[in-house]
Image 1 (tube, one colour):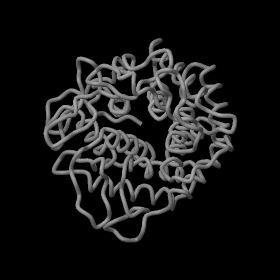
Image 2 (image 1 turned 135 degrees about the vertical axis):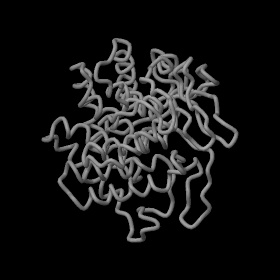
Image 3 (image 1 turned 45 degrees about the vertical axis):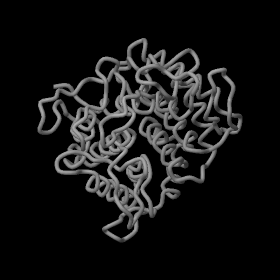
Length: 345
């Protein structure tokens, strides 16, 4: 779902449409470079399935993609197909010399690969991309990861497919298993979370439960996901702006740090709020999404714009002293995915 968010709250900043200019800059005929020094790709760091999968998510989400965006989707799908082994697992790291530096596994990158493949199979307007993505998703969906976040990311891809094809049994089974793997929040109203520590992309766990509860017609699971997401919003708003958990995370009972904040946290929260808004129609989710968009425009702890309009790249992190001006793949994809929820005025 998209919500109307043409101005940041309390500001006169117009929300820009997402641009793929920097994503094109970071992409060659093999894949998407992971890191950048300012706007220049750092080839020596190579590529990773994690980011390529995110790239397939955002390119597949475009309702009316340009020919260039479709070409990006083709490259990302080709990379993921090459990364997948015969059992459905994925390698994660490819060096610039096109040699894999790891073995196939079921880490977060497996989950994100299924997220990208499920989104492409459900949403891409190109029939052959949908068909190939469905084949790879189905193979990968035969696996099960042990890490809850990996399962949560996979669940988001399964949810995309089930919305498009409610009879897709592999997607339904994966979504149900992911909901079980994530668990449920405890009874303590001060810490309604399944684990003792918040780490990264936290809202994806809540979103996966919301998706599972909705599509599998399981009201208690839906309620658990909404409760988790409500709390994440409450603890990550400071005054009128978003102040997301830092890269160090937050241990229950420990001190709450403010920096360094990562764009991936904002993007995960935006996605989850958009999903919750589409399912429940609650105004709180529209407000959360608006604040997520505004975070990139400067409504954050240090009033720092978190993207470069000249390049279209997203900055890599928010520190006490301002932005980390490197424009890597993860942060740029977080910017794009968040701005995809806007509606022009």
